[in-house]
Image: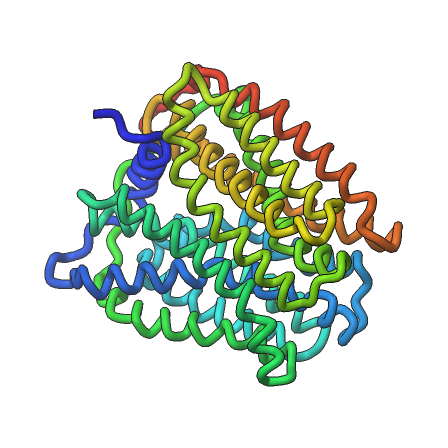
Length: 416
């Protein structure tokens, strides 16, 4: 029986990453505690990104940041997702995946706390540490799921994905009330270090397993010269650019439309929650046809409609466009994940394409939030963003049409 594309993508990507997480001794396995730890860790991989956006205007005014500098602040963690992810397998081979996860959970908590201290230097250094931690931990968790829950890997990866969305939604919606309760934006941001510390304490028992060297390696040749691989990479990066613009700037845009910071944060939270619906259904529906081009086009159309609606529609219709935006972005992300596997012949190539697409793609995505800040700084309002949204969406469509064709990347996999 054929798995839906989403589950197939997750399964093969996890298989490819499994070499970085060798089996732990059976005596060390505590399935219930491990599952709780995995969920708690996943819940902490998005709040550092989504908690700042509802307070960005207040933070910028408090410390004297320009719109361009605020754009750089929202961009820095996104760059780190791509730049630091390749370190994850290297660190896992040296110290063990569980210890690396624990260590960078603590670094994540420290980075979140640091953003609330020492003014502008603390904001930027804390954001860098938080982004690097998320990039490294996010690479290792799927392999741990596959290793310790091989028969439930697909369903538990779905739980992991839901935890990511819930963590993002919770931080987007709760940060403003927390800052109002303490009458301090710094305390509202610093609060999200606490869940990371709790997750680290729950994860601590997993570090008792000894580190074991990884298994055999396979070298994939020709991937970086393959046009299809670049089409997938650029599609993932461009759709991610729109996603991180939403994480970093949507509340500020909505506040500029007349919403309160609380209302803007709740609207971002609701849009992220809606992504769960399309993230799970879009890849399955996309595999019913000959290829994924129609699904990609529809998902990008929903995303662009939602973005333009949030920017230009009457205030009374903003919630509807936020829902449309969430449906579109949930579909575009899950389709990008599915393409990595649907266009590769085996798990080794899928792993290498995943590394290429995420490393290059997330680095490219970081320029989106930066461009928003520069445009706002230059124009003094949000009116020019519609052109940016259209440009990025059209480019994503162009590369998505290439990536969505039913064919495989032309590469060779050879044992090292």
